[in-house]
Image (cartoon, rainbow, N blue to C red; front, top):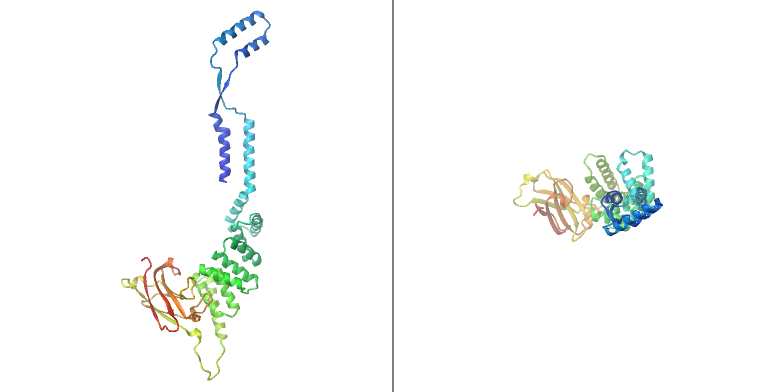
Length: 392
């Protein structure tokens, strides 16, 4: 659009403005030209003699015969040139596709008020444009989102995979691709879908599509403990009381019920051996000296456990609590597990504690933080983490 306006402005400059200022010096009518005209007009010898004498006198007194004239203003040629320039500009604009892209962008901007038929027409235009410009990742993303929303998981997966060719580590795209593949395979979590979902969570632990895919895949495979871990994270990402929040809460209750039913009943007199899931880590969280306890009441505390020495930020277990009094006691167990791994399967963990000002996890939201490294789960009866100002 800017290029077109610039070309039109340049045309106006050359055709309308500059001719008013450009001048040229041309040779005017000569004395010989005047004499020739007189000879053609009369046959009178005396008049011709006088004209010839005047011509000789004028030649003797000849000065500068150059005349200053303005630039030629042949309006027909100028209008034709302007029309040609505009036509070439419009042709280039349409050929490069900018016009269609602008029209599609405008249609997307007004999508909220569009009718179903208008949406279908817009998708058809985007499909055609995407086939012409396969490198346009925005079109692949729009089509992928539309297809997954309408149940066309196969085509959605193709578009997300086209984006992954250019951005193989984008967590949002990895999560959506895993979700599309999960749906396309009849709600079965394939190894590639699981790998993509876990890779997405390694970069963004709050990627909803990846969490939902792993939660549903684990639930369908009867791995209810793992499913509950993912569901708890999804629940905490939603606004309390919202429809999505209540849906996750109901799903967690159902997973807990099925998990309890899947535990085989022990016979009378059978020895009860401690299960691996009975492993618990007690954590006491306290404030550093100089911090006023009353200033940090009512905030949200996250206690996060990860495999010891791991460079991946994806948590293995997370506990979320509202602070009432200091110090605060927290217990981590398999109930808090997520990310597809039970806490009891680890031997040693690193702990990170965040006191959130927004109720959401993440260092940018934390007012106070504290860490402990290389804690042995089986030998630890309890550990103490001291919170310090995150700005220091």
